[in-house]
Image 1 (cartoon, rainbow, N blue to C red):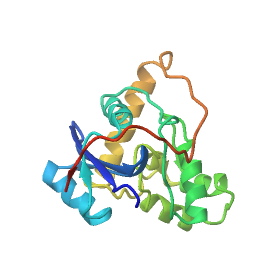
Image 2: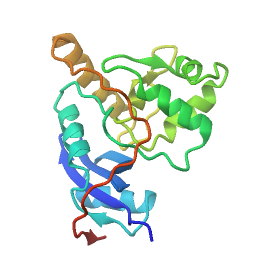
Image 3: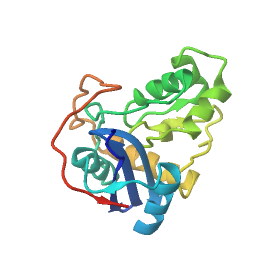
Image 4: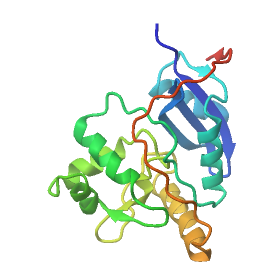
Length: 200
């Protein structure tokens, strides 16, 4: 019998985060929620009701909090789980994952990076369905005309603008202390001890 999905709920200046996965691998993230209850309701709707609530991935949680605080972080060492994601969407997410901190790429450029230059609309669809915003930085993908494009988290494009502003301030201030880029582990398996958890 597989381990139930685990859920971490935590507050930041960008609102409440919900981070879900199992066996150490992160499969879903949402943020910008007005309250813990709102984040939990959204998680139950998106992931399911049988969620064990605990601080199950403290490394990812700390990294996300550091990002919100304006620190230049990478998520290369966070094990991800994209099981069930269609092949082309996975390729698009992989290309998005490689966009450096403080940089942007157009939807057309993203489609080309994923190996299908003509599939701009499909690339946009993959971004709209991105299960791991910030970790897979879909906020760095913008329209060719310079417009922001959509953003599926609460608060929509205004939240996307805040994320880009966070990165712009950090990049403009200094790039000397940016962390080294580790070898990327796109899909990884992690083992670890399990604690008793409260089920939602």
